[in-house]
Image 1 (cartoon, rainbow, N blue to C red):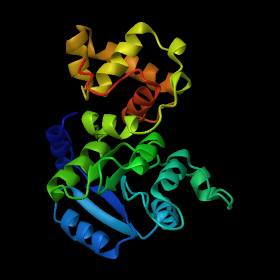
Image 2: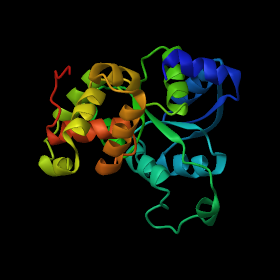
Image 3: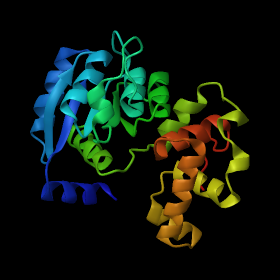
Length: 246
């Protein structure tokens, strides 16, 4: 689904609900005001740190959490991990309401100041669907929220490649290569260039359903939460290197 497709689908239905998690009150207030003015977006809550982000996300059940990473008490990495795994806070029991609830966890979009932030890479590895820069125009941040809510990932291959490869590679153990078929590795490499499923299908001259099957297999075999997480693993393992274009 393209950004315009996501916008059209969203405008035709209920608004995307958003929780803003940032330790800077001015940033939270500004984002809330500006995002609330965007079509198809409803900001339903705020959190000043990672602990509040987890608590408020579980209470309010937003579609998307716009998550800063450098926050007190609990950073955005651990908050993302807890939200997407359904785990309780480190020293607390699981919330029975969460265990009984059938609602899917929210999507997480990391919002950051720097493209080369190691914290961002770690948050993506924890399952965040993508990241946006705080300096972007609010309409682009809103579009990222809509796209992620629609089930897609916000992937910036060049920036992601710089972030991941600036850190020591985890090596071959990061990618169980023997578990992936040759075609699945090929699909993963194309995912890392930012291609959508239809674009991958066209590149490989196969059907869209075939690509969806390969992508699903890649995510399952890598234990990846989403496409972005799978691409992080591909970069960290060395399967994909900066500058790869397919």
